[in-house]
Length: 149
Image (cartoon, rainbow, N blue to C red; front, top):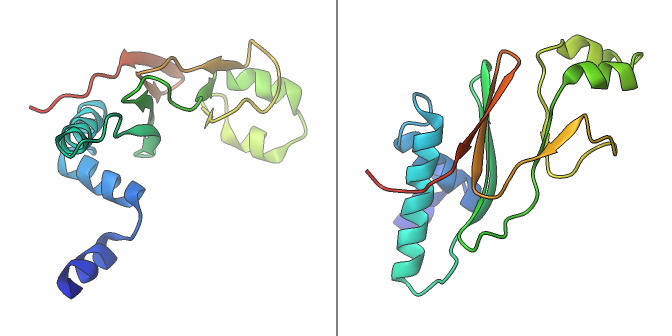
């Protein structure tokens, strides 16, 4: 048992760190959405093999500094909410004197569990079982479909 504990300590002690490591193993750096789908499929298959009916609920966000990938997914199709900004320009209008907003630039992108302000034109709810990829001011949505290769 001590060897197992040491190994866990090496990678971290939380479930999210384990999921991150699995996603890295499946190619997160090169193909983020397929890597996250493989990671989710492995967790679901393992959980179901051990009698867990709905083994995975997650909202995940990863970035390489150029693009941002976020996923809203759960095995039971009732995951927690996830929102993204539709236009950073609107945030500039709302907070013209906030240096953090100004410094972020017009191509900035926010992902959060709940909207910061109640303006429909600024926030969009990410649909259940969806991955979004934001890059250079564009936002693409993809159906998130966990599967092993």
